[in-house]
Image (cartoon, rainbow, N blue to C red):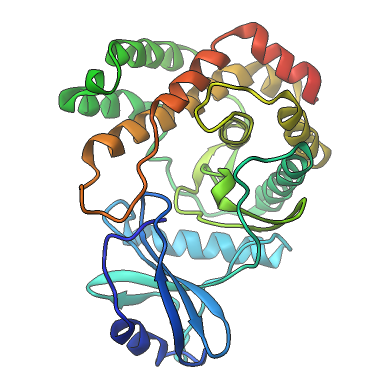
Length: 324
């Protein structure tokens, strides 16, 4: 989440007039994240998130996201709903950009998770994957394995080595490895693809919501687990791995979605792929984010450190040994 398009109470009040949600009471931009412009909206009746979709989100993908969240909500998963106006329209136009008013879910995102919170998150991820086994719509992963080398080359042209000496060569070596070893015979389904702690809402140890599905796509299902593991099981700078959090996450997930031997064997590669994907997009954002954008840039090297950790086969075997 972020703010690129500035809105005032006049624009938001005019939008809310189309809905039966009361009058605007409070409006605040949300700085976290990098993808869309997001606002917290409080009315006389309830609270919402207003999202304006910026250049990275293709408006043609929005029906997929809507259908995905409706499917998950109907299956009992804790996800927000898109709100419809009086005419039944959930997709709006605000300042020339596609926009949606989205249900606000109670809860907070943890900054440093406990093993119990990670277990609950793993269980919620497993529940989501179980619910999506019969979801029939698909969306290609625009940030999958075939996109990593082209993105690396674009970043190299603009100065990868200015972020860290030798980073470009390290990334290209990893592209070589992953292209040669990426699994092609694991179960594929719709996944979240971005289940970081800031996309999970919690009260105490309980998950109250999974949010921000705008990277959701059709991909190897276990890749979603790899993304979540890399996001949850390290300190923010990627320097320290938390074995207890890892064990909790894996135990919560496998209680709902057991992992077969073939997937276990591929998990080391999937974990490295998850790290490279976020290393690359963080590098891209670090290089290209406008200086005046209300957005918090994230350290790319935090995922280089995770990548180095997962590249040690012994470390990954330890994860599997303590978490399955």
